[in-house]
Length: 332
Image (cartoon, rainbow, N blue to C red; front, side):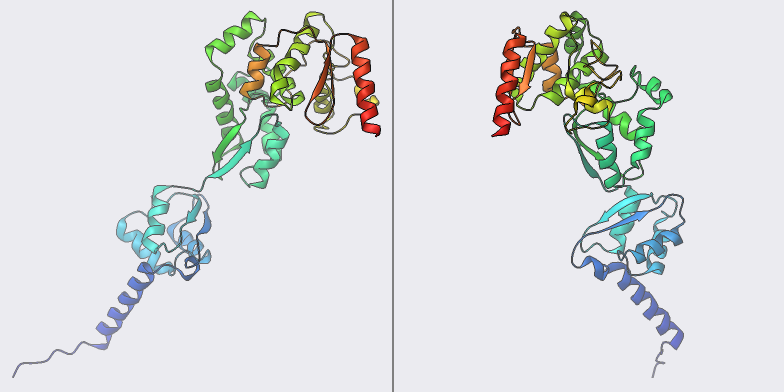
């Protein structure tokens, strides 16, 4: 009769621990039963701290299980910092692979036509990508502007209006550089050549286009508004564009007073003829094209008739009559 080997209590205990650990590794955390969760891994953290963060965020069940799996895969030094979105029903191995891959969560940021640096800064701060103050500071930093070859007082107008994907942890200069680079891919050699034929460099083109962008609401009026400004520039008449005064006084999209129009500021095109020192917003391609191809009309004036359309005039008398009609309509 042979001997029967009876496992010792220690062996049974060890086996139970291993089984328990395997279950914790292979079973998604209960918080992931109902949907995805977001966890942020700070930079320069060791595997033990990362494991604690993951458990605290409810995306892995066991700190020990995560550390053991990381050591088994030899990836303790390969885990990448950032913000991660862990999908529903992801087990510990899936979480580890996500941190190994560095596939951080992307935040979609819309920078629309006519938006300013200040408005962008507020949007980035709301999404916790960068502080508004940091964006504003870098946007006006002379060294940063020289590095990007921007001759104006800020990056205003050089940030192409588009939908972007940013990740938390990007620096303000990385964010703004990407947007400036996007603009430069959109400005074709033909556009720049047409601008030069009109006596404009890229800075002047973006400046004029930004004013057109902020004045035009209905897209079919962009070339008409461009024509008014070109006709005024040729006659050395002040542009008298309200958006430039709004920009000067940081009253974007707000009604101006008579006193506002008298403010002595380089961006006040009621007081100073010619283009202002730089763009006042981000112009889209349609506004840039309008600046390059104004309508063949002799208009010198326009006044808003409603929230979308303007009345265009050639003479002062026509313009005064249009203004009178506008005031009468508003008084009713």
